[in-house]
Amino acid sequence: MKRRFHQVDVFSATPLKGNPLAVVHAAEGIDDATMAAFARWTNLSETTFLLPPTEPGADYRVRIFTPIGELPFAGHPTLGSCWAWLAAGGQPREAGQVVQQCGVGLVRIRRDGARLAFAAPPLRRSGPLEADRLVTIVRALGLQAADVLQHQWVDNGPGWGAVMLRSGQAVRELKVDWRELGDIKLGVVGAQAAGDDTAFEVRAFFSGIEDPVTGSLNASLAQWLIGAGLAPRRYVAAQGQALGRAGRVHVQAEGEQVWVGGEVAACIDGTVEL
Image (cartoon, helix red, strand yellow):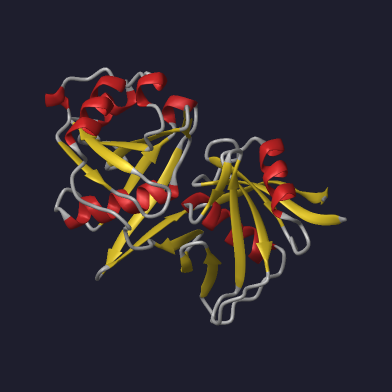
């Protein structure tokens, strides 16, 4: 069966500079095995499938697959799926706000000028990393213990832990020992030098790969950093330079709610046989 298909680039207004996402529309009738197989075939960090909602108040439901499994939530698939749903003629129930249903429940998305922004879901786990886990991370990154200024669990679904280094430059220069890192899902953040157009440099490592630009990680990092007084309530983070990308993640805290936004660039609009 032919279904509409988008491939978009998220957290960038320029194609090929953000994080790509494949989106399959009208995914009713596609079984789990086929969804997983198609995600392996696209070989992108995430592929999503849009479905009718099953919860009151949701505008659509999304299932999010990596090449190795399904995720309850991820940031760039949330923004990219919403963009694709709107581009295909989706009409939200409430003007100015789209409500996405996914594995973590309902996620609100709003338009912020040329950007879309999602309401960061609550953290499932916080608090400092365990000592043995931190030792493994330090070793995997080729660092000394003193190079890590702060560390924290920042898990909002995928299982992120995070460390803060002394500078954005230190983050950009990291070389990862993937064997040592193992199955740890790690975010690394460092403050940029004065005069930079972004406040932080971010990198994300998991499953033997580096993710170009990571919405879920930036969402949970923002909750940690803002809550701990380590970041202003509004800032822009850079991610992807080590991979030749130029991702920009826009963060804004309003009361207790953190919003995470970015632009979306269209790359492919067509059909797929599934």
